[in-house]
Image (tube, rainbow, N blue to C red):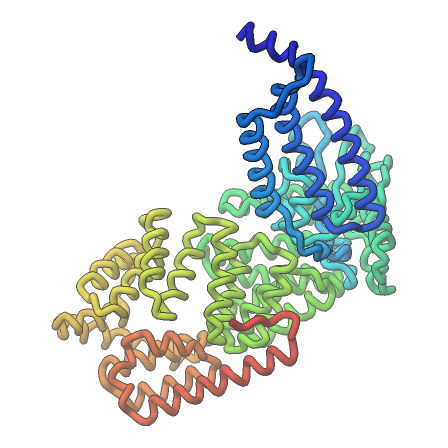
Length: 623
């Protein structure tokens, strides 16, 4: 080691490197400035950077062979080493640099992401204030129709992140990033905000607000208006009015409301109960606080939708939602809460009306957009659904179920390549998301790719061996392949977990292995259940009509099978690939009516595609 150090000194390698590195840094800096000033193609800077980087190794080799006093000849070893460096440089340039000269696609500066504001207080107890202000500023900006505002769901994933602005903006598709901090001391608050042009990493607006806590709403409104001005967004008079409107004059009520929202977003039964108590406290302090009524309505709805509590909570949510709207007829959150209630009560027309009202009041209300699109899809209008759900995903790009929903709509329109692309986006976001894997497996099953269907079934079970619909997918794969004993085994696992009665899928496989008596008992029960459901005029998705048709087909009642299949189509059922691949209509395939109904489905699909392409060309990409 001592000899090596002496050699380095004697050959003046450090001196050579010092001169080279200082020259290289200057060259890189000048190249960067010129590239920025004259908007030169990215590959020019990249070429200079990588060449100079490899030059460091070249200088070491050169100084090793030529650093001693006196003239040294070129040796074969040096030539080989330098040649290898040149080859490595060329390989690096080939794989790392785009020489096409095409300008990098700029992100739209009117798409803005409000990153979680940092909590600069010493304790985490006031974390809810920073999170609440983040969401309130986001909500104020959402009222500006000329802006696209990335959802809270997507931006909160970047709380305490190590990622830089370029990475975040690229992942969210946002050309503008707002970041900030919050600090409270006594009755005072300091909010610092800065707006960054993500394309150039340039600050285009910043402000520090030192105010009384009671001025919090004025600060939020001012931030929203200043950002809109900085981005040259058009502000309508009604939008200015909404932005400047104070939700409450009571700071204590606002604090309770922020805490309630903070707990609500944790999405557990226990946290939901905490949010209910806090929303109630907010209303006790300010009985005219419309947002608190809406928040309480959402929490009550969650009790039923997520935590399987009695339906009576939906009736309470209905009253609270209407109260919120009565107090503030321009409250988008109130209409969205009311729409969710009507959706749960299967009063679809009223749900549509109120979702649309929420969207009209807040064009960036991503969850209202998504729910509205999902209702359109399940109501047999996947052509319209794609537009609304894609808009939602633009605002919430990291929401897995949003990507899956768009995938489902493309599946309905027989655009399986597009459907698979969207499903893979969902899995890329959360590789261990069970339903994302199940959905992709179903897509491959419907398109006849059994190998990939089984791959994603196996992947699902590896993630969660009790994944209910994972075993259901596996059973259907085996049934379609004609492996009915294995299908029954998987159905049994599904039934054991769900503790439900066997369905007609199970009965079909029983028939195929000769257990017709057991199958008949199941099918008779299914017929009675479906007949009872439809006699009660319960609103169902169009799939339920198809299910009834498949039951009739399995018992070889072809007339009723065709009648209910036609009803399913009339209700908007158009998943033609599933019809073709599943075995439940096998005994109908030789009938003329079978081809007629397939033809009807194909014509409806073509009509839907044409309508979507003409009406929403920027939101439709069928492959």
